[in-house]
Amino acid sequence: MTTTTSSTSTPTPTPSSTASIISTLGAGSGIDTGSLVTQLVAAQFATKNDTLSKQSDKLTAQISAVGQLQSDITAFAQSLQTLISGGSLSTQPTTSNSSLIGASTLPGAHIGDISAQVEVDRLATAQSAATATSFTSRSATVGTGNLMLTFGTATVSGGAMTAFTAGSAAPVNIAIDSAHNTVDGIASAINASKAGVTASVVTDADGTARLMIKGATGSAQAFTLSGDTPELQQLNVGVGESATTIGSAALNAQLKLDGLSVERATNTVSDLITGVQLNLNSASPGSLVTIGSATPADALTQAVNDFVTTYNQFIGEVQGDTNAATGVLYGDSAVSSLQRTLSQLTLTKLTKSTDPNVPSTLAEIGVGTNRDGTLKVDATQLANAIANNPDAVEAMFANGATASGSGLGGALSTMAANAANTTYGLAASTATYTVAQSKVADAQDKAKTDAQTMTDRLTSQFSNMDTIVASYKSTQTFLTQQIAAWNAANSNG
Image (cartoon, rainbow, N blue to C red; front, side, top):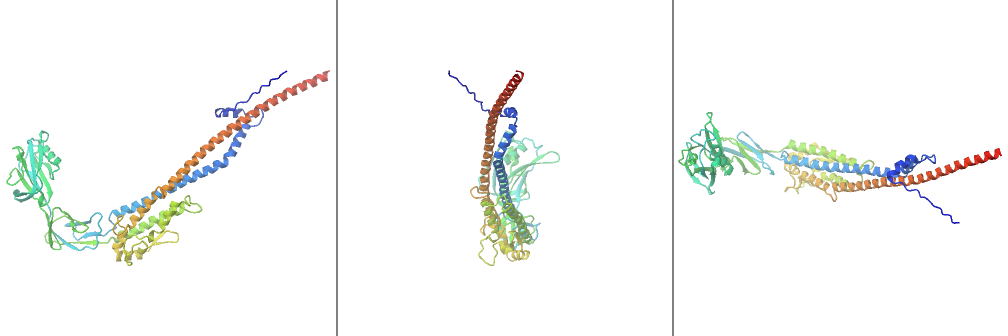
């Protein structure tokens, strides 16, 4: 006789059913296998998870620290550049009478010693003309047609133009259509033409309106205006015209520089003293104004001390991050390179001077290095450098790259640019740490997946074991009961 034995396999639980299986584990064996599975998985992955967590925390700290260093060196450079650009660290022109003449340094200019005498005999003025008769209101209709504006030189006497010579520029035609045929509309059309004059409407207390036209200062900016219709001829400006009156004539400014008479078309003169802008405020024939220069000794001293203070704060941050025992950036090549560059800054040549008696480095004006890497200022040496070589000290605080060298601002800007470099700078370190952190995160995700896989496998194995144990216990109970029955029968027999 053939006996057929059938075997039944226990299906492996899916992850979604693991929780329900764990809740019933131990029912047959009496062992808390659910807790056992949890402990076994935790023990298996504890070291790996702890290692990955520490790696992630360290990378987060490194990314934060290197980002802070890059931000701080950039802010340091920008702050210095802003200070330099403000002009307070360069020699400034002075004036003995600012009510007559103001003086300032032209953008980007560097001035040295100045000693000049300037006399303002006449300010530059602009021609202004207003309609002789008034209109009933600003919205009063004048007429349509064309206005022809011509520039040149003119002679004015008693509010009337007595002579006019047209310049080389072509006359400007200004069309007055029906949308601009009022006093206000004509003023708007003139201004919209951007022809070189400005029109406005002046209203009297009784509401009557006059059209006023004003040109630019300078003798060559006199103008005539002529209409091609009888209505617009009410606005004519020119020789023999009675429709308008000349309020002021177009004249050049007349002044003397150290006794030499010159004229300029405006009251802002920037081509008389090299690097200096003169603002002519008032005419006073016979009054001499002295234009000189002053070295900003106090501002330079403050700038050097402020630089050292900021430097010390930053180098302290770098040293903390690179500390062999506690620094999160210890061994980072980009940070080490920045630290080396900073340590060499006091000896870096900031100007192109070849004269050994003229300072060109921070060390030569009194900025020294302490044993701990911070900087200090020798106040006496700095004061002597500013007093004896003011131009050289100023050149160190030049606005970026100049003929005299890169200056301190340029040196710091170069450091900031190098820090932002994605190949070898701090930005490259940030990219490296970010990639590493991403890999750690992937490893952590894989560890979680592996832990779940192990949990599922052990759960399945213990579930099968529990089923078998439960079967054995059931058989044992049956046999125990049978033996007890047999023993009882034998005793009765």
